[in-house]
Length: 230
Image (cartoon, rainbow, N blue to C red; front, top):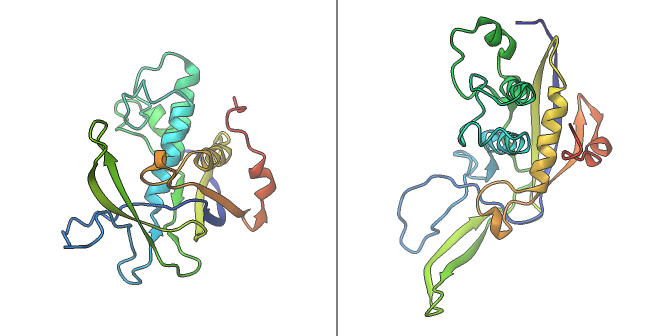
């Protein structure tokens, strides 16, 4: 494993452009209550964005963009897979370096050292200012009878809410543009959605006031086109 030469920090704000639903996993049935609640902090009861949600979605989008999803049969990219080309293999190594490998690396000490430890660490994102959640009523329409089936109530954090954003990246000697890869993934997230029901317009976000180690990178970030990158 190479020498650790830096730990860089990217901070900023996540602003919601549409309502956000990240489920809280509360299976308790409440008569007359909300069917799908958002995840909330156990002490403050404020909604928040788990770092794991950001990490998982950004990783997934990058793997789709790099053509690694089909090869890994929908599972997180694993460097031990047989890749058609060296380019795809190298892309899988970058993903594994940044986010962690999707499986154990056995009987290959050189590859294990090359992948090393997971570089990225996402913090949970707390609300910048308290805000009330909203409840959206939804149902499915029967195509024949036009009657509403399966009515449900989904809790959302409303458009306009802002969350504190922070992520750190360990940088080792001979790492190849992993921080730039992370920024591409963040831009892909802006173009897609976060949380559940993205196809219904939920979870549209915007990164604002981005800084890297205290220096503004917002203008640079806004100009990123992930599909123009090699």
